[in-house]
Length: 171
Image (cartoon, rainbow, N blue to C red; front, side, top):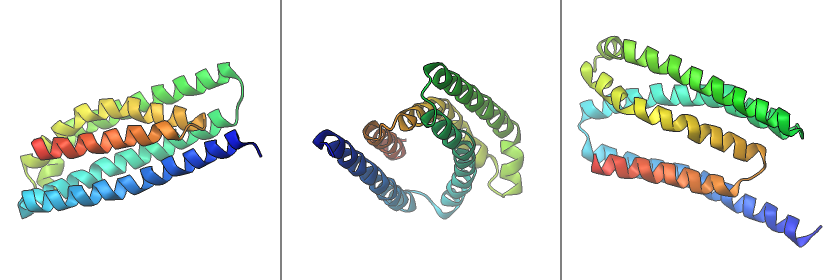
């Protein structure tokens, strides 16, 4: 084996390991901050919001990102890569618009049903602009992973986690 190839896999292993470590580390920090900053009621609204947003992100990741990575990585044709990439981006945008519209229409009824009133709708209204950014982040991440580039993902995810943490602290 060549030294360059060994170094690629070592760097990829380190980047992926640090990314996997950063997610729970930032999660614990966020949880600790939120439990100290929010009342019991506000934390309940936040928990409901996390369930709704995580359900969407996991569904989108399962349907689009995994398929994009699998089909793009198994194909060497540049035209096919472009077609896969564009179809994945288009589906990502369509799913986000459908979900966004549903959240916008049903945020108040869901809040009433879950006894969080209009606070849930307010939290969702802060989330909707972030969904636009997540379209491009998820697409970039899938494209990068399909090309077996794991190092840049660490920087992207660290930026995403740090932005969320700082937004939580200052807003």
